[in-house]
Image (cartoon, rainbow, N blue to C red; front, top):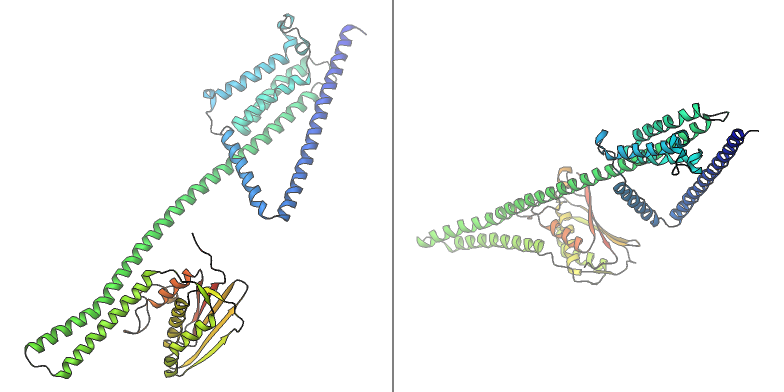
Length: 451
């Protein structure tokens, strides 16, 4: 066996050992990575199942990692063509790799710099060096860059395999390396594209959310201004009417007194009408002050049944005059509630009077109380005329009323809504036109102080 054959066998054995070592190392890394991912997935599922609150934390961590990676990694819209410094860096890396790969076939191998065992023979490590520019191209130019760099790698290793390789299957090993490098770079490129798409989608979603929030604030401000204008117009109208009547009767009384031609009965009639209009204005101003004052509730232990009974006592006479049957379904085992007795009585009285006025021909008024583990419930149900669908959304609007002139100014439900809101509760309405209406008050058992 001559020296050349022995050298060839030695190189083949060396390449085989190195290639086997790299393949074994890659297989072990892949196996460990697969096991780690499987274990992480199992642990994540177990953690999420045990503590659902950690799911949001893990999601935030994932989003944070993706966001940091998106900020650090190069963008896909970098400069293209010869203007890109990345292109020249990748080309230089491929050229250096080709120089090392063909070092034993060029005259430089005789020099002291290149006369090294690493450069005098070709190892699989030389082919592995081409992974650097290929992955670099995938990071910068994504899928197109990984494909072009992999093709350049193939163009570098193919001539040596065809012209200089002493192995029986010269194309097998280079093609395996090129395929492996192309798959890794494509995987990296596709994952980077996914991360970038997610980041762009998140940025677009954030921008849309900001724009929507600004639009919502503008709509809320416009609605406030509209409501303020309607409130001012309603106040001016409601206050102006009784004052105009007082002014007319004042002028008539002045004229009669000046001409010394006014009977006592006429003067008293004028004064009575003036008193009625002024009383109406006073009632309007008082209701408006109750609506605007928004005084915080004075909390103390309250029995809801006592509140309902006291409110019913104030309205019982009106119910009797209209032949209304009152049914009380008050739960005897209600817990005490921390609330303002007077304010809740005002709410219940207003709802009961509204129910009575909705049944001018008589009917049935049902007052019901109940409780669950978190809140108390008060229901005021009537069998009156009901509320039309178009008026349901306006019930708690200040100065909105469907009553006749002189029977209300439209502030009762608005004041009641504000009182229940300050008790951290809510009012619900169910109504069917011609069948009756049910107002339900829900008040939490535990009042939470707000800083």
